[in-house]
Length: 45
Image (cartoon, rainbow, N blue to C red; front, top):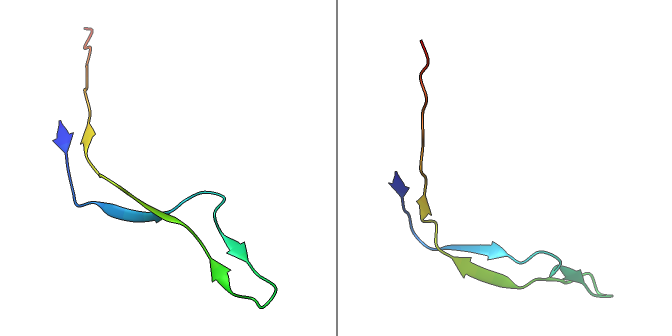
């Protein structure tokens, strides 16, 4: 199974900062939302 979607923006972990005036800043990144999933099943009677 292959799933796909648009590129998304996210906030990088540990990048949120608040300065002395209370202004919040962060760093963002972009990534694909594609995923490949293999499924294997076993049936025993």
